[in-house]
Image (cartoon, rainbow, N blue to C red):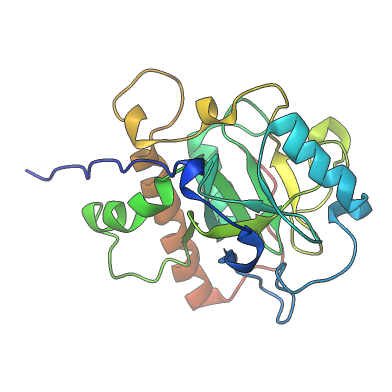
Length: 238
């Protein structure tokens, strides 16, 4: 009988020392050549002042940021990230829960979706994919954890349309929140984790999230291989 891999211990912030700005790498993919958030100078997300963006994340949420502009969020401390094609991400979210609504934060950028999971989750993903029989397949799924970072989406309300929904799908420009984090609420309680396996907390366990996302990443790749990429990403959640 197969055994679910045991969860690893999330990174302790005390394990990090020194200036992280020179050691952090960005593992997020960008669909537009030369449009990596690590290399893009200029204004902060949503044209908000960089310092205002940084203060919102550091003071209101307690999330660590990388020095410099544009503002980037350090992964592996409070959360890790699953980076998938937005088309696959939307399909997975229809199965995991409605948007907007309660659950772990989700962001969009350049046709990609970032799903936040518990810190340490990125290290579990390769083993889970193997255990779930997804190992060896090119799923276009990247897990970003310890030593990584992502571009900071515009603070909630700074780049959204009516009802908190982003006006676009992240296909162009800076990152935006599809389901933003809530100031004053510990984000860890909402994040998918290995410890939620078989529980009744209402938070999806990491195994279910990875399996669901991998399934839809595979379907998207098969569809694109036969018909080519879709011209737009769906926003329906039926």
